[in-house]
Length: 313
Image 1 (spheres, one colour):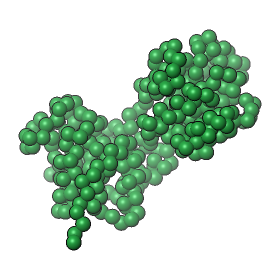
Image 2 (cartoon, helix red, strand yellow; image 1 turned 45 degrees about the vertical axis):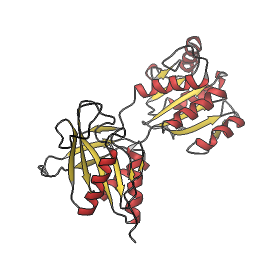
Image 3 (cartoon, helix red, strand yellow; image 1 turned 180 degrees about the vertical axis):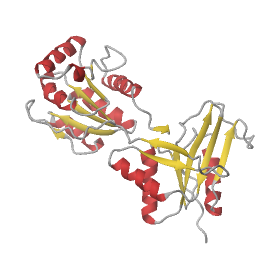
Image 4 (cartoon, helix red, strand yellow; image 1 turned 180 degrees about the horizontal axis):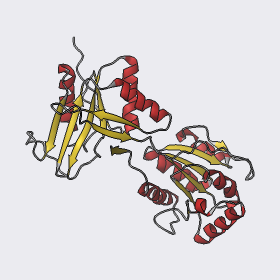
């Protein structure tokens, strides 16, 4: 008896999650269809270039709408795998599917490719593993192959936090909830034990404010935060972080504390250009006293300056 196809959809978010799943299917020799939003007009739940994959059992990983049309996309992807033909579907304004509405208005064009470029997907997966950006190129059915659509995809964002106490723990939990990679440093063993299960690597136990810390884990797709009330732990950590390409470097504390922090770093021969990168006090909402709210406020500030995870070339 033939096994029935799955109708489940895993709501994976980041392109790296979708590409990692595709890489597993490539390694196992399984067939799959790559699903991509290639054009958006008006409002949309997801950005153009968003990805999903449908495996040979009918299970879809990723989504292109907020539940409005994903089931229909899944059905078309199953059919594309059956026929082996690439298809382009338009939803919303100008669509032939008048019974499928996009509540946010506008239109969404979806490309379903039952034979995607496996080498390109494997290369993008390897780029993500190296913490590098990469691209995918798409040719639409019945379009000039010399005029492809290309998107650049960036690695998942990484947050490196050094601190202790309730705010330190809350920050790790909140950032993990949005899918960021989490790396933690603390002088407090209880705090390290609390956040250890959600960290991407074994947390680092800070033994002394004078110890040399290697912060090579920080790259241009990263943020670094110090979350101390005892600020003696900060200077060495910040001096090291300011030598990296981190997109965001910030500190907990008052304006007065931040001014003192800046003066201390000047004494350590940190340049004015580097000091200008240092944010403090962190958070879009000042004077919060609740640890989870401070974490959310800080997350909002970090996100406000992020590069998009997808951009059209």
